[in-house]
Image 1 (cartoon, protein in one colour):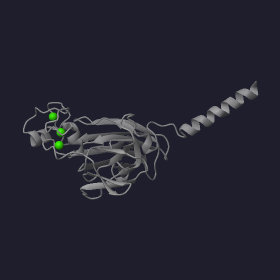
Image 2 (tube, rainbow, N blue to C red):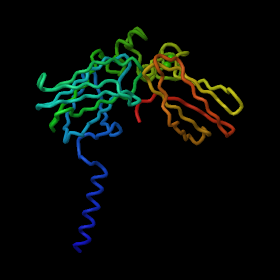
Image 3 (cartoon, rainbow, N blue to C red):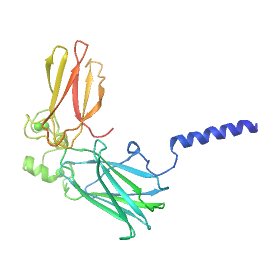
Image 4 (cartoon, rainbow, N blue to C red):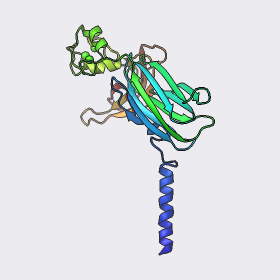
Length: 270
Ligand SMILES: [Ca+2]
Ligand SMILES: [Ca+2]
Ligand SMILES: [Ca+2]
């Protein structure tokens, strides 16, 4: 009987270790990031760094043309590091602060999203002579005013429509894309020719080239299907990220079936 109990205990210990070696608040990897909603007045979250290899990740959807202030602060004498990553999880900024130079350790970044809407990641961890403790992270959009509360920034509504009466689910230009999705993808909600549409064309026997309009600092995913009736779409593993202001992306497919369908979407998260 004692032997059985011992074995069970050992198995349980291994299971806990495999799931999370250092039980923490928000996960050590980007893939374990905690999702945050960032309202117009911003959001503040708090967490705890248990050991010096711990790193907590948070994910939020950054909106186009929006200026964000990210501020992380510790509550005791620490060094700290704030890391900011883009939709493709590439590092954009890494900043550190030491309580020795200005207590408490505090890192502030101001950043403007010049791309489409997309998932951005903020990581908090210790740096150098780091001990454990708590921190707070504040994310605030500095230029986002939405007085009619329809999720469309009022400045964008005035610029695009000349009033605040258009709705996020409306499709003012009748191109099949809602005003909200056109805001997210940075296409024009008053021009039906401006839309996130695919243009497939055969470039060789059995090879199709698919291209679509893009904006910089944005990530897209292509899906394919052999049958529209089943409604089953398969994502391509590759995510497409335009580099420095390209206007089109393309993808070549050599397929062996008689027909293939494609769709593309703005990547808003895993
Ligand atoms: Ca609004
Ligand atoms: Ca539209
Ligand atoms: Ca449009």
